[in-house]
Each structure stands twice: as C-alpha cells, then as structure tokens.
Length: 65
Image (tube, rainbow, N blue to C red; front, side):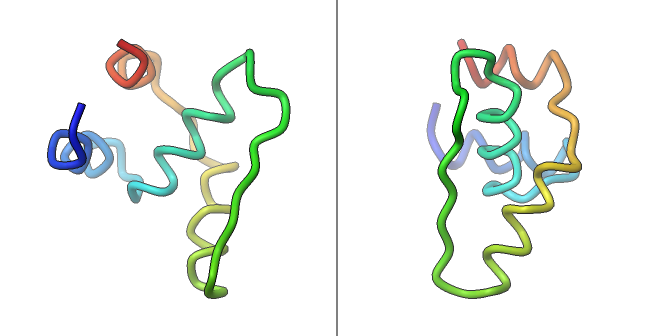
C-alpha cells in the first residue's frame, strides 16, 4: 500500500497518518513495546493521541493485508 492510499484511510478514521500507524502498532498483539519518536513537541502530542484512538477492525484488516 502506498502513502497516497493510506491518507484517505487515516482521514476516514479521523486520525493523522502518525496516529493511524501508532494505533495499528498498539493493536498488533505481537508487538509488545512500540517505539515512538518525535523531533518537535507537536509531533509527540500527535503520536501520543494514538493511545486514545481505537483501531477499527476493518481498518486494521486493510492495513495488515
């Protein structure tokens, strides 16, 4: 899947691309320690907001396939 295909999926889920990526990692049972990084405080705020986002099952399936 390309970035251009991911943008509308994130928008439809009400998430930024970074939030969608982190939410997917948090929803993946095989990943036990997600590592995030940011170069500016605003980026960190955006990524941390993913902890409060639910990854819809259909979106997770689309991203995983």
